Length: 567
Picture 1 (tube, rainbow, N blue to C red):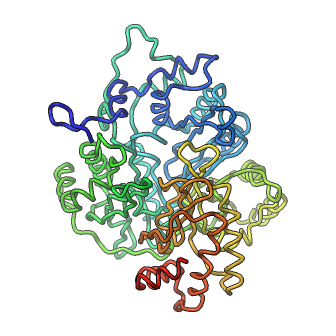
Picture 2: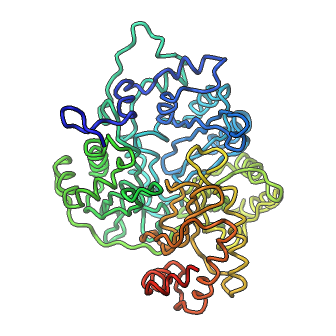
């Protein structure tokens, strides 16, 4: 960190960019209209993130030629889509992108492989569906997550409503988004330039880094609540109504290889609040990040480092000062499982919802299953509500019971099975996009994990563990987009064909794992795991999960035994 002459830390380049362009426009508008340009400047590519767009290039072709393209992410609070919106996105994926849709780990949708000439039409069409990409990326509050399954009671409905209210309250205001993508105005060519309004919540330089917020209803931790910067854990009263929320703060997954000052962290339980103060508290937490986050070092700029450096007691006192009332102490809560409800389930109103496993979140037509076409046909015919999940899956909700058999048959006609949706191991796997599109990836993830799961499955079958569920997550870099650091087995890319292996998370998302071995070749991963899985098969307690066994037998074992297991 470099200090300025007045003793203040020198701001990062990103902070200077935001201060110079508080509308977040740069020269995006004029570059968009320039037919000769196939890319945006490095500065503008930073502003594009606030608009939900990442400028990328095809990593498979990079050694031959740099072919620029874009990823576009929709911000969809709670992951809820109307059938008309999903069908529009399906058509846009074919017309403006690479023909696939991807369900994100924050309940959004991503378009991949968008070329510059298709970017404007895609963004305008997304706006016309009443969806938005604004603040799906960038130094702002990202998509607000909430339980994916249809609420079964009034408590669940209130949580959904609060999630939507917070998403609206924490959305940034910028005239540039509508001007560029809807009106087609190149703001940088205005004469004289219009004075940009300052966002009343974010100020002129927005946040030091991204901010992630989620709601959860125990006992299912389907949003990985403790990995979020800010979390609201619903607590019922004796009658089952919503008594309020336990506020959690300071979670986050991202780290950097070789930098011990960066690390994954689970959130602290801060206090308990009544339901009517939810928006106030959310704003208060965000403004603490705004005012105390590190604006000199982006690797140290997440809210988790504010909690780590200053402590939860300081954080609670500062929050209470800002919101003008005292929180009560956190109430107890617990989780029994992570993940999604797949297959058919009955809603509170008697209608049905269907949970569908989407391997690595990629909605496409493959050789054995034409998932993209199957979903389009079912949604067009039966008009269900679509609910995207944080585990990269989707639910089709509000289906009439008399349509259950017809929907099942229609899906089966395209190779999409309702029963037996992959093995229990496969259903518990997650991967980030990684290569060939993500500019941060140093190793494979989405394209590699399915085959690795098959190899691990073969070992489990040999050991009599064929029905054993294990949460497996892989990322192509240490930023942790697929939340590998809470998995029972986490794989984190080091370079092409090399991974860190992390062990010891649990099945409820309440414990971080630890690095077990570094620089493991992809061909050696199964050989590394085999003796551990064999010991687990022989030593596990009744109902003991692999991650819990690792925490008990690997990490608590003497160093020499742990080393022997890693050989």
